[in-house]
Image: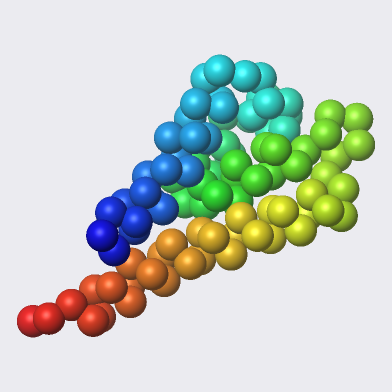
Amino acid sequence: MCCFVLVLGFLGPRFAFLWVWLATARVEIAFDGSFWLPLAGMIVLPWTSLAYVFAYAPMVGVSPLGWAIVVLGLALDLATYVGRTAQQRYQPA
């Protein structure tokens, strides 16, 4: 069960970000039409990129509450990477 949760934490936000990128124009608006920055975000920090896309408002930018959501996304990314390392550490040899 723990492996399933880790796989969902690792692949889930990437699929969600890809879906938002392909189905809406929010990614192009949030990243100002760039291609490489959202792609790098999807690969390296998917929760953070997804949170930024949802927190970004076209005329205003990112509000303080939006930045708190982006920091929460960063915490989820770090937890995903640390959780995978911890699981490998405690696996029986």
